[in-house]
Length: 327
Image (tube, rainbow, N blue to C red; front, side):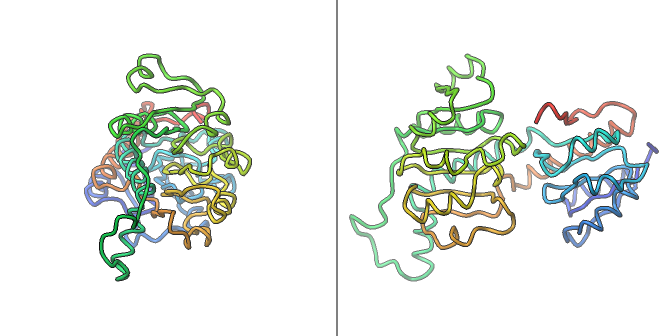
């Protein structure tokens, strides 16, 4: 790779990151911040030594099959890599990196915000005032549910799941979790967390479910229609991970039918499209995939991208290489 590799960035990044990239690399920026079409992505990977995509860019085998001989690194701006065909990249000798760790606290904050917002009907109350329908305080108006003492089931006890658990303890929630592997006993003791080897058994006993696992082939529709049916009717679901982890159609049907108490969703199965049924429900809080959207987080992400590119260009292994076995 040349000393100043050609770096193609698919979306607009924070100004300090773009400025630093321009100093270090031969960079092609997306000033208009218009999502690239599939054809434009193909042209980008033909010209680039390094591609910097985001979670909305689908880097599948059909795109990678047209990569130019120069493309050696995909330095993704984000933690999830479900938008990249890792197997195809490996076959073509293309290294893939991501930006782990820097979004943990921001995403956990948003998860906790939704855990509070849905049972206490915060969004519904805000709409009531904005539409001029609020007639004043009443002893039985806008009654929600207390979260203190309730059981929180965390699906995926990685960095973010652990950060959510720490926050949840401060709000008096009893922490339960399901994970591919049980966490270390010291962490379990710190969080006072109860491990469930069986996801089905955990789901059937929780008051609130928080989805914090990555989207992989193994977790696609992990909360399937069958598993959603296991949830008690009083359960709330919060998802700040990936929409594909939940069968969104089944979830919408159950919410409409009163089979679940409510949901807080920051991600959707077919983003940016949202199931129309969800849009009509007052007991659902919908956010535009903003769980990690802080200026500090985005700059931290960009700095990780720069370090990964610079390290790779200098002939070393970048610190945030993604291995297929990790997902």
